[in-house]
Length: 385
Picture 1 (cartoon, helix red, strand yellow):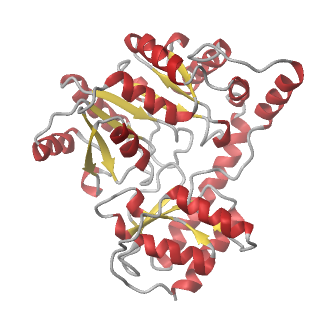
Picture 2 (picture 1 turned 60 degrees about the vertical axis):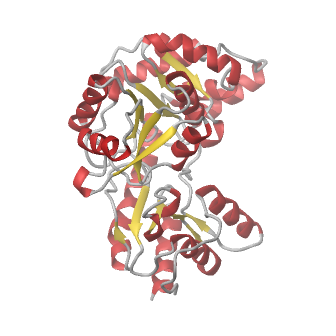
């Protein structure tokens, strides 16, 4: 068992570091189960693989227009029409090299160095890192049960008062990583209206759409055309390694985004765009995968509290359990390292998501195979006794 210890002063142990260490241990013959990274264990949809094979067999793969192929943009517009009842002009859609490129493009087009952008704490660490790398000031706004684990107009006002700075942007994820929070229509509407009334750019990260288990899955596009929406084929569509995502933009931002994209990326990979176009029609196959995540979620929601981990936030969407480990340790980094070394279970320390209070939290991903999730829980139970 891992005993209580002082907070670690060693180099932070981030999600990708955990993945690298887990990969190294697995290559050395250790029976590692990774619950560290949000990567589905299911294969890319068959239709996407077939389309990619045909493209490789029949032609040259090259550059496309900077904002993507007409076929993929039309297919994404169809997705919004079917799933959200929205008529989105394909010209407002930009295809990106994963959602990461989408965030880069949005930040570069919207903000100047020194501008302040609000994100939730705990939240996805790449937001913080990309914003800081671009010379932007990050305002981390704490979320808790009092705010329904999401950003609110009141919490944004309080953060501005506390910092003495005015916000130029707000970035919200729903479903959220690591908390699993789903911000419903009422909350999204309040946030979008607040941003509009105060001249604040509103960026909606919707990369976990399709993976909502509790609550209403609302796109910011249902509320306003001024939101910058970022989505990806990585999560619901099981296409992490294809590095393909998209943005839906206000019309006024299409050309500025296109000019930056031309310079930074030329275009997203054509092969990935071809596969993604086909993946949008694979809903029946993908919903079977979603059902397996739901079963994993139910298992963790029941078993983690039984073995001593309290669930720190809702598990309403995405595929993460963010848990309080303070019963066992106040050093989540050391805890994660020892857990991997002693029982070959990889998870991500909370400090990756919350630099202030994450020392008492761990994030478990339940995107893996059900048999592995079950085995990991049993290893944890024996280890913690």
